[in-house]
Length: 185
Image (cartoon, rainbow, N blue to C red; front, side, top):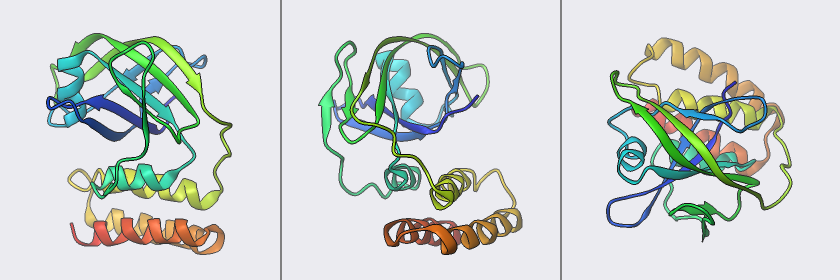
């Protein structure tokens, strides 16, 4: 199964990179397989530092903004406990991991990890239909070079109906940010 969330890694200058990520996980959430493209900062950082932190969050706004590179302000971070990394303080749960192996034989790498520490900051509040739609639109925004424009437009129109019916104002604003990004790329 793939679970959507955020991955923090450490950049060469010591700053924190935040990226949306959907690792393949087992049912017990004890095994994570990340598949970042080799051109991504996440891949470069994991190859270099061999560790990171994966976050489960119900804040789709941060996932969407990280996906399209408009995360203008870094969220509050706290130090990880077992790896050299940072935890997003507003996340629900986090999973500190070390890299066990990297298969970079294809453009989309496969990075196997071993969990070193997990923690819970707060309960997962959940998603309504609009937040699911925002996650889907965020994924579309990261796949523009892989998908046909007509296909993306059809999916966005379908998602727009859901957002119009079920979103609060903040989620509507996030969705419109994604639509603008997609329209301009």
